[in-house]
Amino acid sequence: MAATKFNTEAMEQCRTTVSSQAGQFGAIGDGFSGQYGNSDIFGKLGSSGAISAAVSAMDQAGTQEFEAAEKVLRKVEGALDAIQTNVADVEEANKNSLKAV
Image (cartoon, rainbow, N blue to C red; front, side, top):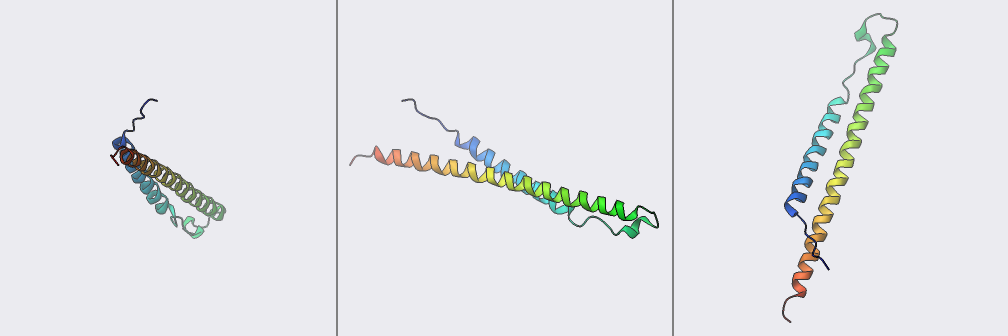
């Protein structure tokens, strides 16, 4: 049976990077919220309400998409953490099984 090798430093670097990126996506999404104005800012244009509604819809969609990206990256971070924990637990159990009784 071949020994399995895990690069724990690479897994930790990946987990840390994913965590950082998740926070950045969340911050971008937070920046979208409420960044639209009242239709009055467009003056007396006939389509002021439609323009305002379109900007509001785009703002809401941006917020939702960045929030979804943050959630996915948080799940990836959690999965990487679980892998690291499982590998460490197995290695510890294997080490303990080799100790003299």
